[in-house]
Structure formats: structure tokens, C-alpha cells
Image 1 (tube, rainbow, N blue to C red):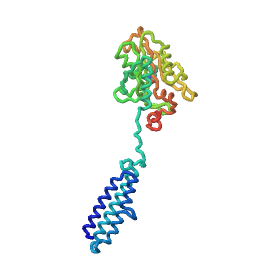
Image 2 (cartoon, protein in one colour):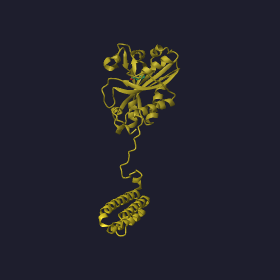
Image 3 (spheres, rainbow, N blue to C red):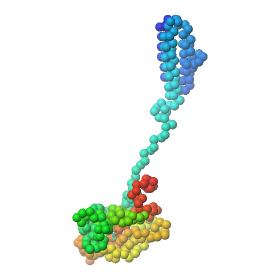
Image 4 (tube, rainbow, N blue to C red):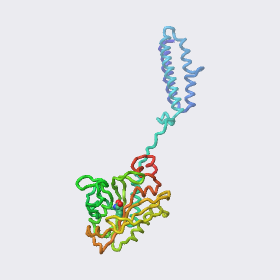
Amino acid sequence: MELSEAIAELDALEAAGLAAFREAGSPEAVEAARIEYLGQKQGKIKAAQQRLKQVEPSARKDYGQRFNAVKTALEAAWESAKARVDRPAAASGLDVTLPGTPRPRLGHRHPLTQTADELIDLFGRLGFGVARGPEVEDVFHNFEALNIPPAHPARDPADNFYLSDGALLRSQTSTIQIRVMERQPPPVRIVAIGRVYRPDAVDPTHSFMFHQIEGLMVDRGVTMAHLKSTLRLFAEGYLGTDVKIRFRPSFFPFTEPSVEVDMLWHGGDRWVEMGGAGMVDPDVLRAVGYDPEEVTGFAFGLGVERLCMRKHGIDDIRLFTTNDVRFLSQF
Ligand code: PHE
């Protein structure tokens, strides 16, 4: 047999075999192609190998080389056809045996932000609008307008974060009472939420920075009874009707009379201060141009962290600022 003729047969065998494996669409079809081309007994490769004897001896080396290449190519085609039909997912680029791509974790609002929204919503239903004020305050709004004169111990540099030139990080949101009354005539019914700063020793219920919700209502005929029922309604609305709160006589320079409001802590074994409150001092009303003969008002300032802690059974105020996702992701 002529070498060229034998090589042409090998070329045809290769082309037909490759096409057969390429077109085989199922494991059965691949197996049929394997038997036809690579079968040990009657496969076409086997036959081509036996044809070596018919090639004249001087051309056998060339024939053998081409034969080996065709055999290798068909075996490779068989492997890839098998892989394609056995694991269609892998052929499409999807390997279901690989570890899954973790779903990106959704972020969400900080528990205190959620609490602030809830408080604003609750007071909104009681008819209170929302006001805001700056965190860096002047001594006029933080102290003087609130009846806290220069010699008052509350202005002690050791008890405040002074910046420069009579400016400080506000120590209470009562500053916003003044800013609101300066801006508008009565009636007033607002709440304001924000950060306040005091150089307090940090413990599970104290921090050098926390949030207060301030409330102010000024109108004709506002009394202490309105204050107490508003705070009770609020406490029951936010903490549940089984919450226990109590009022204790207290003193603030800008309210008269004044009270401190406590709530029975989760666990039920101790009272924790929820905030301060009282009837706006007539001097404060006068200083912003209101007539205390015409209108009266109440004000309160409550600790937002403690409200949130009481509601969710949180033991340590520091959890709000340590950014531990095991804590944060529970909200
Ligand atoms: N500003 C007071 C405080 O931070 C709380 C308060 C607010 C008291 C309003 C009376 C009226 O302690």
C-alpha cells in the first residue's frame, strides 16, 4: 500500500472520529463513538494499527508517527466528550461542587438610629414635631439661657468638654428648647434627638457621649399633669404597658418644679434613671420673649441608650459603640 494512500486514510479517520465525539450529545452516544473508533476489538483505530503491516517497511515509521497522533487526538476528543455529557454543569462554567459564593450580608441601620426613629414616630403620634440643634454649642444656649449662671457648678470645666472661646460640646439637648423658642412664638410642641457629651466615668449605664431626646411643650394652660401623662403614655407606648416608671422630686435650674423619671430596669430589681423633666421656669420663658402670664410649658430630657437598653434587655451601654457585629446584627 502506498504511504500517501495510507496517510489519507488516517486523515479521514481522524476527521470522522473527531466529528463523532464532537457531535455525541449523551453518555450513550459518546460510548458508541468510543466503541466505533477506540474499541479494543473492532475499533477503527485498531484496524488502522493493523494496516501498518500492509505499508511497505521503509514507510512504516512515517505511518506509525501519524497513527500515534491520530490515536492521541481521538482519545483526547473522547475524554472531553465524556466530561461534557457527564457533567453538563461543568461544561457551562458552573461547578456545583465548588463552595457556594456567600450571599453578601445586608447592612442595616444602627440600633440607636432605629430607636431614634421609633421615638420620633411615637411622639409624632402624640402631636410632637421634630427640631434640631448643633452639637457644638455656645455657653449662652448650653447654660445662660437655661438659668445656669457663670458661677454655677454645672459649668465647671471638669464637668464639660470645652473647646475654645465659650464653645463646648453640648452637655444636654435642652439647648434646643432655647433655639426653638427663640425662633418661633408659642404654641410649641417638639422633640429633638441628638448626642450629648459629659466627661463621666464609663460604666454599663454611663458614657462620655450618649443621646438624649428632649421634649418641649408650651401653650396656654399646660400643667404638670400633662407632663406626667405624656411621659406615662410614651413609656407605655415604647416599653409596653407593663412598664413601671416613677417620678422623684428633683432640681434643674431651668424647670420648676422638677422631677427625675425612673424606670424599673429589666430584671425588675432596680430603678434606673430615664431622664429629667419639669415645668419650664418662668425666667426661661421670659428670656426668649414669651409671657409666663400667658403660657406655661413642660420639658423633658430622656436618655435614648437607656430606653433602648430597657426595651431590648441590653446590659451594657458600651455595646452601642464597640461595633461588634454579633451585637449589631441582632437588630
Ligand atoms: N437637660 C437635663 C439633663 O440633661 C434633663 C432635663 C430636660 C430636665 C428638660 C428638665 C427638663 O439632665
